[in-house]
Image 1: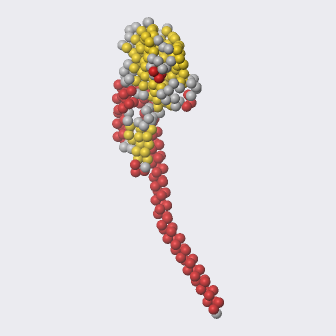
Image 2: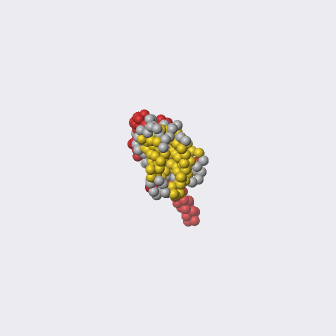
Image 3: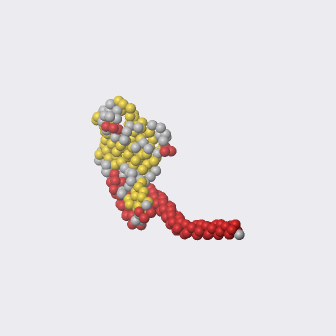
Length: 275
């Protein structure tokens, strides 16, 4: 009889333990399930916010390129050379600045999460060539000067074509010192190629009958094209050291475009790719 009572006692203990374990499991699920749901909900919102940020970026990027097309600057790439073609002074500057301001106001008005800082674009229209870190810009946009500013001499040289002009006297006002930077000029019937030292300034003046064009290459390889009393069509080429066409991007300045969704912890700064 004693043995029977002991066996039944063990069964009772096991049943009780089983019920306790089941109750604890249910209790644990009751705690974990709301947490898991909240976590899943938060992750879903985060993904939705990231998708929204991507969609906003894509829309702003696309419309910004359409506005850039009003600038009158044509960008092309052939072999190892990146080309920029425009009138100097650029007669599209005023309309471009106006449309850019309207575009900036419209985007920020429609989408509070977006902040654009386009003052530098409006004033100088700088275009960065990546990954070679060379900037094509204006002083100012609509003015009489184009500048090409390299961060280092990591390219072959410059190719400048002055289109649809008759030229008079062409003279080096400051003669170049021989060096490793290639400079090719084509203006009407005049054509010359020189290899010069980018650490020393040089200056070429072309009579355009009337008016003139001053071409300066300054220390550290900066190219300056300055027109005097003349509107001319200029095609400026930057010849690279290798064929990088598949990897070249033409960009606005960094961090001019911000998307801010603080409720989802999304903050993104970027530039705008023009080409």
